[in-house]
Image (cartoon, rainbow, N blue to C red):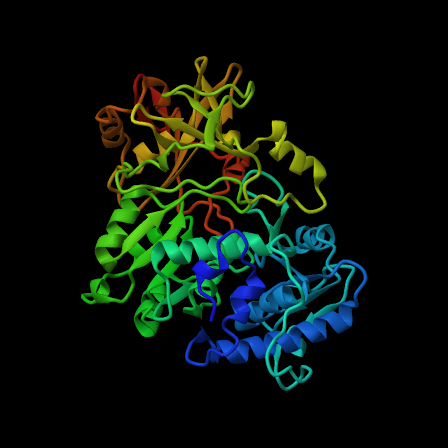
Length: 511
C-alpha cells in the first residue's frame, strides 16, 4: 500500500489513492444502508466505470451530472470517474427549476443521475438530457460484473475529475474545474498535517457536491487510508450522535455548523469522544473555542475557496480572530490599483505567484480571465493586516463599504457584534445612499435584546470606530443561507424591510 509520503502531494492522483485501497477489507464507508469495505467499494466503482464508459463512449464530453445527497453511490461515482477519466458534475440539491436546468446545461452534462430522494427535484424541469436512476450503475445486482480489482486508465494529476459549483453568495454559481491534483494534493497534505491514518474515522456531513466535503473530507480519508462516515444531510443533533456511534476522529465543516451543534443540549460524555480534529473555515473564534472545550478536540479554521487559488494556514500564535500570518505568495492589494496595501488598511487577498490550484471555470473564459487579472489570482475577499503581520478577514468585495469617505469592510464589524452574549449570528452590509453607504446589520439572537443595552454594549467596544456603528438594525429569526451554510447577503440587501431600530443621536430607537 502506497503511503501519502510515497505518493507526494503535488504528483498524486485520486486514482492512485484509490488503487492503494483496493485490497482493504477492514476499513471503508459507513452509510445509512450499512458498511461498504474499500475493496468492495472499489469493485463497484470499477464496474460503474465500465457501465458509464459504455454509455458515454470514447468521444464527446464525458460529463455525468450527479444530483444526490451524501450517499455511498456518490462516493462510488467519483471513484469510478477517477479510474476511467470521466467527469462528475456535482449538482446542488437546493437549486430548483430553471436555475438547476441552467447548471446542467452550463456543465455540458450528458445525462443526470438521481435516486428516490432527489428524482422529484427534476419534476417538471426541462433539463434537455436523459435522467437515470443511479442504482442502475452502482448496485451489484444491476451493473455489469466487475473486474477482480479496479485497474485505472493512465491518469495525470491535471486530468479533470469534477465540476463543482461555487456557493453563489455574491452572484450566479460558476462551475470550478477540479482536477485529480485538486483533490489528491489537498488530501495528502491534510492527512499528513493531522496525522490521519488507518485507525481514524472521517465524518462527512457537508454536501459532497461542494468542495469542502470532497477536498477536506473525502480526499483526506482516502489519503490516510481511514474509514469514512457519510450522513445524507447535516444535522446538529445527528452530528453528536454519529461522532459517538462511529468513534469519529476527524470532521470537516464550512460556515455555521459548529454554531448549530453548540446549540444542542450538552451531554456529560461529550468531552470524552474519540473526536480529535475538526477542520474547516468561517467559524467564529468564540464558536471554535466553545466547540473545542465541549468536545475535547482541536478546531482548526483555515482560509480557502472552491477555486483553490489561495490557502492561509493558522499558526499556534495566530490571534483567535485572525486568519493567520500574511506570508508570500499571499498578498494584499488595492482592488482598483493592485498596489500593495499597507498595514491597517483594507485590500483584496491575492496569490501573487499565480493560480495556485485554480484550474479555471468551465465554459466561462471571461470569469476565469477576471479571476487571473495580471497573472495574479484574485480571491474577491477583503483583508486587513495588523501591526504584528496577521491577516484578518474583512468581507467580500461586494461587502466593501464607503462611509463618510472612508473604505470599510463588514468582517470587523460582524466580529465585534458577535461578542454580544445573546447575538448568535450577524450579517452586515451596505445600503447605498446619496453619497456612499449606510451600514445595516441583521441580527439573530437567542435572548432578549433592547436598543438601550445594545447601544451601551457598542459604546464599550474600544475597537469599533465611529464610522463602523450600524445605521440600521434588523432583528430576524434566521439568515438566508446556501447549502453550505454561508449567508446570502444579497437576499438581505434586496429585501425591502423596515428596520427594527435606527441610530439617532448616538443611540438606537424604533423608526
